[in-house]
Amino acid sequence: MLLLVGLGNPGARYAGNRHNIGFMAVDAIAKRHGFPPWRRRFQGVAAEGTLGSERVLLLLPGTFMNESGRAVEEAAHFYKIGLDGIVVFHDELDLPPGKLRIKSGGGVAGHNGLRSISAHLGNDYRRARIGIGHPGVKELVHSYVLSDFAKSEREWVETMCEAIADNAPLLAKGPDSSFQNKVHLAMAAKGYGGPDGPDDKAT
Image (cartoon, rainbow, N blue to C red; front, side):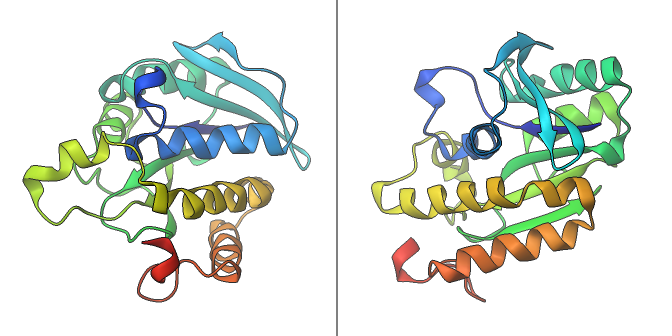
């Protein structure tokens, strides 16, 4: 079984935040692949369905970001899912908007959601890093990630979530590079995520 986790903060006031793009991506997967309605489980909401032939649990932790690991640990232990079967979708300051990178393990790069998951489960889970860009000054990071995407950004965000949802079955089949490449191709086809980040359309 595969566990796909979207990171974000719960509640309407955070729904459009840059920090919540993980929620947005996993919600898009649920809609695209006909998962049943979200149910309250594992200190959050979850939906169980299939991607291709693989059973999958989608999870949006209902804790705030810095306690995400509690929900992920509970779900993983309940279904006996190893770290290589966990994919965490999260915002990434160090990638340009419109870029996606997927990797296993590594540091947490100051991300409180990843820090919490690593504290509860260890580091060797898979991360789908969705670029949101950096405000340029460290002091602005907190307000930047907790502010909504600008109107001019929403089109690339929707395109990214659609590309992730369309290609999510590849996360079950592997290798992860196939998923990453397909998302890049989908973004490029819409004019986003070029070699040095998105073009003018995405800024």
